Image 1 (cartoon, rainbow, N blue to C red):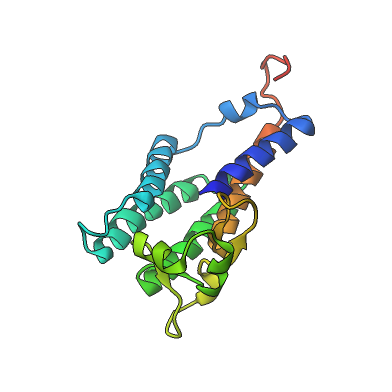
Image 2: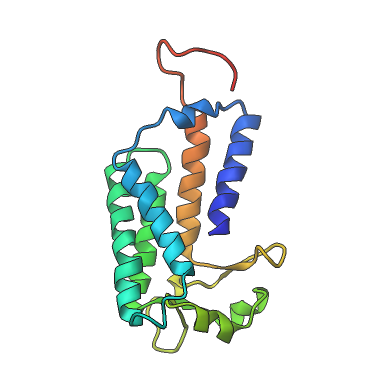
Length: 189
């Protein structure tokens, strides 16, 4: 998700400009952090793989996307006192709810006009995304929010995605501004 990378980069720059220290990010230890990293890499890469022709879509949505998402929720819950993680937890939870209720992430076709690809081609290439229909449940939580920018950057995101990204940005910024632990060196970084 390019929006997540944008948020990390932006919050890091703002953190540095406002006097935050990058080294503080390296000093944070999270419960389940190795599992969290592995799950994020797995989930982000699985969504991009053309697996639709090899496995039933229900297996892909509920196995390849839902199981890593549930592990992510568990890890975020374990670290809910970490700045920004409660917001990220709510965002991932909203995405899980809408995907569970609809058998995939609904996408608003009218909003696809802002994305530099044909709506049908996008849906054909994705085993996670489905078109919004009159029977779609909680369509307000679907991928309906256009992301502006150059053609390579545009896309659609959900409210859950926005909260996840905001939580990560808060984490980066606030962690960079945490007080130095006692006895830590005070060089600039």
